[in-house]
Length: 331
Ligand code: CUA
Image (cartoon, rainbow, N blue to C red; front, side, top):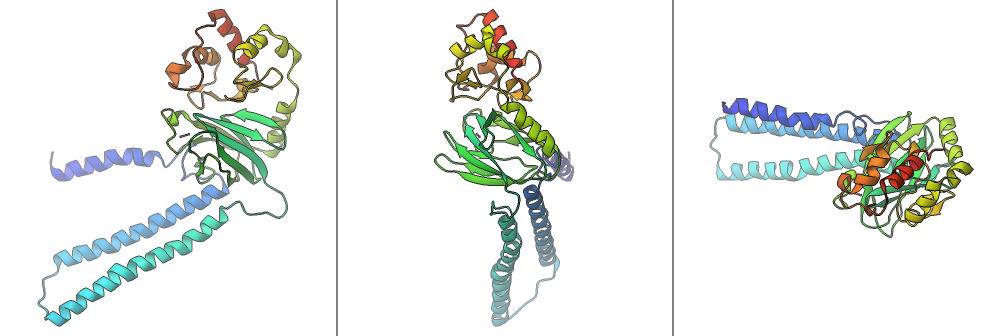
């Protein structure tokens, strides 16, 4: 294969994964919220500007290669060199950076969680764990994990914390990313402008299962969101609490996991509404019928190193009963 052909082919092959990120439920170029629009706008502005710089430098370079060499006296040569050094080496980059700052600083300012007049932001606390997300709605007492529900059109202030190492919270279609640092609380303001399901992903390497640390985000119309919260504030049905599997759960799982009305463990994800979640294991499996039974048996193969011990001491019947009971945990 000739060299130009090889270059063209390589470029095309490399373009596939690059263009793959231009769409989909995790694309910064398909913003669905205010902060994400700011990020996308800054990205396009920087791409345009840097393309312009590339074009100018390329034209100058081609011109320098093609033009006929000229003989200059020493004095004139020094002056031309100085002009390029000051103009091209100091003035041009200085002005370029200034232009980008004039552009970028107000964008950053608009993304800050500044005080608002009128309707106050909804508060949600998200804590990163190796390797899952704890989600709390402090105003309503609702707790869930690995899923985040938001009302459309209302600003949301997410207080981001970490329980162990540094994680980073990022839902590309809704806003920028922010680190979750042990011992600190960072606030990220998001506002979804349209209903939809988005994907968030931990974006700071936090251990072997960093890639399996996804969060499913659902933006809903306000009434739907309120109904979602209210459903989770209801007391758990007595039949569910009295089932034999509830006692089994409290005995074997309840030290780490909480299920409202059954156990108070707080080292692992709250499972009170597990049956209603779209995925299991922070994005590992789709939560379809039978998936929980599979997860209880195969979780260390599906997500090696996760904090849950093997369930070798439980019989198949016990595991099936637990899975069936967990699958029904939905408001
Ligand atoms: Cu948590 Cu990467």
